[in-house]
Image (cartoon, rainbow, N blue to C red; front, side, top):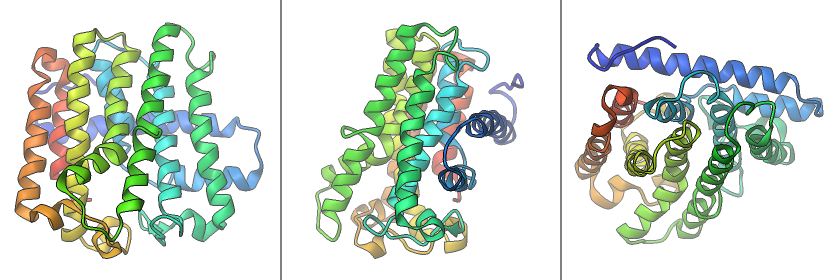
Length: 305
């Protein structure tokens, strides 16, 4: 990877950093998917959503957490691929008629619109389970301390499972169309969106052998950035066009409670900015090694899609 420094123009260097991380992650995913011996229709559906675009923020956070704790090289790439598979599965299932019933994702017809609901469900199932196969594959994780691998698997599972993303999605479904308290909205989004984002940066740090103090700091960073990411999404939901978002239906139109709807647009912006600033504050002990994490925290609340 290029040796990018925090004291260079950060917008340019972050774009390069994200592009490099995305390229490395997608090259790994291409190789891995090509080697799978699975039914053609399933492979087509998995690839359709996996390579549909996207910012690859979770792999970028994993790489940045890995590097902030002294990690070097490609040992982080299986983790990046696994995180993106889990994120993609969640989007496929989130778009289903039983969930959000979306017709478009990233400007393209959603998986169930192209492949039918059954194959879309199976593609999501396959991506989720394949992610954990990657993380537990001794060939892919060769040379990594098995104790670190186990810690990473547990961290990712917590972020993706019933205590994290799945639990948050359950709260989301159960509270649709209802008036909910601010505390429940924060819990919902901290689980549904924030948990896997937190797991991404923490698991990268765990893979690099980060100290308990480093892991604790990056866990706080991930919690703040994860919630800021969702607030920024809610803001874009009411300020961006359908073309910019790549979808046609807003959460508010579906009866979901959003941060702008509950607190007002300007207050929501202030909340997101404060979370981003708080995330940056905990990175001080990492020095220059954490410049990508600082830049990502700022990018997350400034992005336009």
